[in-house]
Length: 322
Length: 246
Ligand SMILES: Cc1cc2nc3c(=O)[nH]c(=O)nc-3n(C[C@H](O)[C@H](O)[C@H](O)COP(=O)(O)OP(=O)(O)OC[C@H]3O[C@@H](n4cnc5c(N)ncnc54)[C@H](O)[C@@H]3O)c2cc1C
Ligand SMILES: Nc1ncnc2c1ncn2[C@@H]1O[C@H](COP(=O)(O)O)[C@@H](O)[C@H]1O
Image (tube, rainbow over all chains, first blue to last red):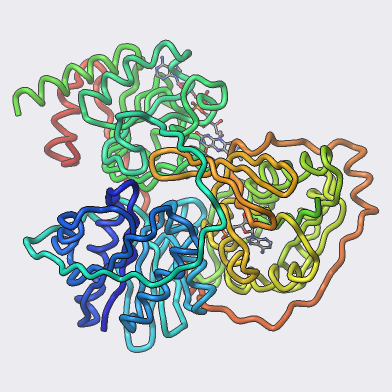
């Protein structure tokens, strides 16, 4: 039985979340004595597609005629692959494309979907149970999928993908798909060269305690020294001190890096909702009563204007000694 | 413009989450419910702005039992013209989407607007399912919507930034920050909401594909380890050797 993994490409590149999804598919295939087939589209190179084998795919089906990610055409592609492979389990990454294509496929095939899964399914006879975050990360729920075909969209950064030397065989899979009714007019690239926040394993974030947009140099320097992405609290994005795509929390984006360093952020519950999936949290705040300390692993009661540069120096020292 | 806005109910964002009945049910005791922020601040308000400019009508739809009426009245107070409630427990996303699609299918809505996700189940799936059931295009996580006749231009989330896309109505749109600014209902709105129509319809036959079997809370964090602000070498050392994240 094959586990089908839908692999998103973007301008010829395969996103980190898609590699994680393939690896996750492999973990499921090991449990169900199946093999992993990936289905993808666009302009990724032959070499990159073969390399999906490193993460666990045996076979890659590719439709190079689909250039623009459109949910109706991609749902057709996913459906064709489910049928061709007789797949009973379909995996997506729970990112931009996964969020629009997986539910569409779910409704089309009447196949139950768990969006934002964080764990490998528990499979016991006919019971198929997947855990996901609910209440914006404040709790977990176990969902049972009751249909024959099961769809799981994996929350990015839930698994660290392990690799092997295996490569995948690549097959052209070009059936007709619905024409896009939505046309792309323009792209706005954010964050320039930096690490995209949702993919970042290390994040340095700051809030209103930094007092003004001109003070962000010390935040960026620490991020630079660590190789981290930068983030911010909502008021800081709302007043325009930082770009909107850096806003994390309930109404911003939810991230789950390995390390989240928060300076001058009080730790309001709506902020925590976006970061409480982080593995390790460091809080830097002048106020020892700041609620964020309750959610932190390491705390520094001190002035961010002194502590951040000191931490940057310590990181640099550590890196050069390494 | 004839617009349908999907409104769901969510616990206030400061709610302390707990469960009852052997961790199979969300404990609603003392919970303050609000309109799901994405539905209210972004989908509903943008729909009202479009109506105020171009005319037309804004209808809200909610799949839920009678305990949803207060949040539906809030949506009416903010300015929706009329509301429909499908009288059923919203069992899962597919059940909900089928009810919305069933209501909308012969009403000629040019736009169906939803929030990007509910803050309780964080599914981000109802909109895409409604679009599939109605065979309409779907633009997800849109932060801007401009209309020019029947052509919609939108900014939507994309890998590494945003895309500007264009399409012909009808379409389904899920809305996020940037779409509009929150509106606080005024006294006149609240009074007017009392006499606006809130139609209750019975659910269509529909199935559920998934079911929650149990809930749990994350393990309590241990006590925070405090580090001397003068000694950042120690923090780096702990992050490397103890936490193993750098
Ligand atoms: C429905 C709703 C949704 C929301 N969604 C979000 C969301 O998605 N994300 C989000 O972040 N917020 C969100 N909020 C807002 C949230 O409630 C808080 O208001 C916000 O997170 C506070 O931001 P802050 O911590 O930067 O600022 P403040 O609360 O003002 O905290 C500043 C902190 O900096 C500390 N400080 C001051 N000077 C220094 C210094 N020199 N060095 C170190 N520390 C210093 C202070 O002690 C304080 O703790 C939401 C609110 C609502 C009602
Ligand atoms: N019970 C419901 N009734 C009406 N609309 C809903 C309901 N549940 C979800 N929605 C809409 O669908 C959006 C996405 O929800 P979800 O897929 O559950 O994250 C929400 O922001 C609402 O606009």
